[in-house]
Image (tube, rainbow, N blue to C red; front, side, top):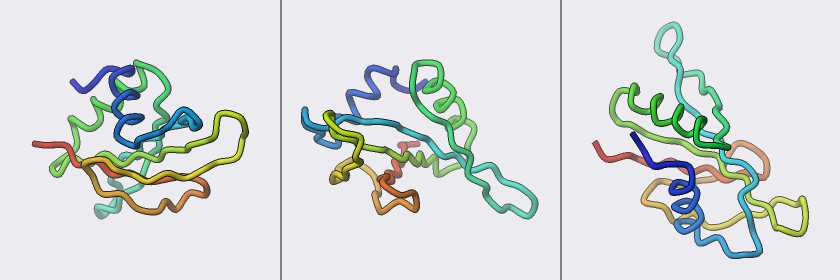
Length: 111
């Protein structure tokens, strides 16, 4: 299985170099559910505890290669409700999100 919740959150905070002024408001994993003629419908799974993260690892284990993990991370300053952005520096591909005020991170897991 994958990392535990505390290890995972520590990894995300360290990888994104999040300082003490910012906090992660939400992390959502999007996995592809293929329908019809192979069209992917992306289903969101919010990661907020050990059980929800375990569900994510189980979903990823069932995906065909490449096993990609796409996370949407909403960062907020600790003293306000305004969203803020940060640079993504994971061993991954990162890019702008289609969701307002969110960052998109795609992590490619080793086979």
